[in-house]
Length: 163
Image 1: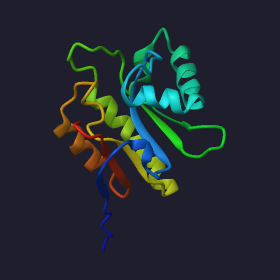
Image 2 (image 1 turned 90 degrees about the vertical axis):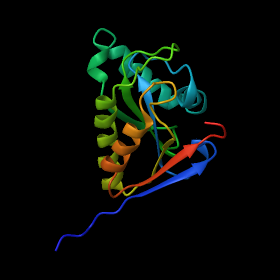
Image 3 (image 1 turned 180 degrees about the horizontal axis):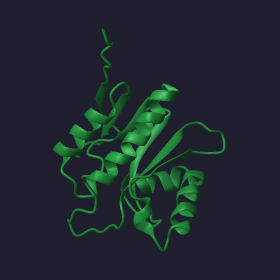
Image 4 (image 1 turned 135 degrees about the vertical axis):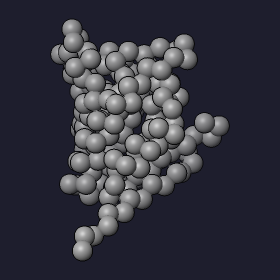
């Protein structure tokens, strides 16, 4: 008889960076810009992680859509205190209320993060409504993907007050 793989998804109040998870997962665009939201905070808190992201985007600057679905998991800093999973779920970005998140690409990126987390037995933290606030995706759809993809992984969804 097979063993059922359970997953623990916990919603917490506060900043995702308050988590003790070793992997902080967030959505990024393929343009090399971490200009708002969690991405901006990653850039400010963890310049090393941002440099890895920027180099990869620059490498693909003529074919940015080739990055869609990638999950670039990089050290947050030189001390390897944790890892940042840059999930390429949107090619471009905007502030016009449109949908920039490719749900299919985000699912592929999540699958890559989940595989690493399972192999290393590391907890993953990500912002509540990842890909939905600035990216415009439907939270019900993204939440279902998280539940499906992260089977067997401890996941924290961090919800900022008022979000």
